[in-house]
Image 1 (cartoon, rainbow, N blue to C red):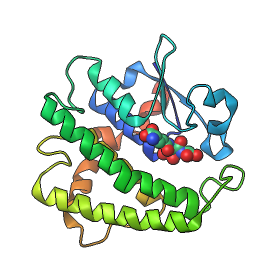
Image 2 (image 1 turned 90 degrees about the vertical axis):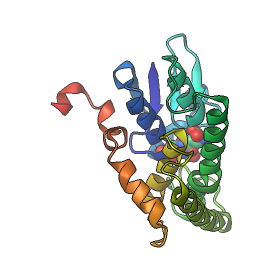
Image 3 (image 1 turned 120 degrees about the vertical axis):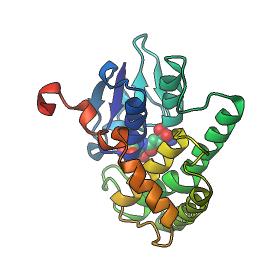
Length: 218
Ligand code: GTS
């Protein structure tokens, strides 16, 4: 399998964490697409993913799978023992709902803030910006942080009792928030202590190391 990504990107982080959780790192070859040069908007890449976003998984039969949720579902199903996307119908429904909510209320909102109300990827890549929309989405993201803080006051993980894709999506949101210097409100102590715990997981800690050549890791 190949994964096209930008190693430090928050969305790519989601798939890198999923690979770590499933111990699939050695089965993937990474191809870097330079976001800052706009390589993801060039026809060669758009032919792989119409949306012009990263990451994209390419299977050995030439199938391309984009969208972090879809890639995670694929990776999780490979060994017939899903641990990230739910084992029962109930788990699958709740995890999907919470992951979608983490995209809508947090991660995608931070992303819109970055692309619209900050210089984003620079003038050559950001061809249309709407700062007012960006700032609204920034405020939405902070509201999302408060929502997930409330969730994590009641349960240890975003979708309940187990680590899942929904945790990974919130982690992606907080990685992006750090990059754009959007702090989690100090009173969101449940979210902050959950995030400190998440950063101790090896899949999260080692997500950048997994695409380095073996020699560089020695
Ligand atoms: N819905 C997509 C998914 O879940 O995979 C969104 C993917 C996405 O926005 N990826 C970012 C991207 O390609 C990568 S990163 O910002 O996290 O590194 N952004 C570039 C752009 O121009 O939108």
